[in-house]
Image (cartoon, rainbow, N blue to C red; front, top):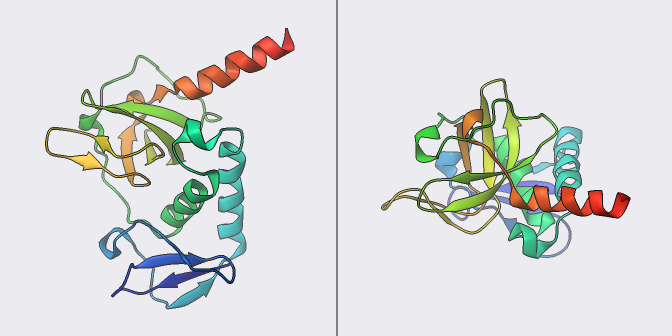
Amino acid sequence: MCWLYDDKAQPLSIQAGDGAPFRLPYKGKQLVNVDFCSAPFNVEDLTLLQNFVDVLEGYSTDDLGTSVEEASLCAAAFVRFGCPQMPQSWHFQKSNIEEWAPERHICELNSGFDDGLFLIIDRDDEFASCLLLSGDMKLSPIKTIKQYHVIKVLHNRLLPSTLEMRQTMLSSQQLA
């Protein structure tokens, strides 16, 4: 596997085999540290990719709105090459959850216009960077976030995903 970068065409792609490269949805201005034409995946890239696959593999493509592979590749690419972001919490309604458990990697965000399913790709004590798994999401009458794009928000905007809650209920029923 290797990263491919061409600032004239679609900027960043991943070559995973002999087939056509997988084109990532990120524009050049959304990326940093892409001063190469071709670069091999390193151990950190593969570890990131595997971590995201591990989080998502229990969900179906129908549940996620995307394939585990595409979402994981986009998440790994953004963690590796995505520009640092300023928080944009004001787009989303507050949740009543005081503390977000570190083992929770799937969340929902609600803008009041739309809600979306997100993968938390990075977090610190205050903020979480969230990659949109579901289709495009309306943030305001004039702004939309596209699938696989990342937005940084305060933890108090994260909502438990109905998908995760449904899986927890199914697991509990199977144990009973």
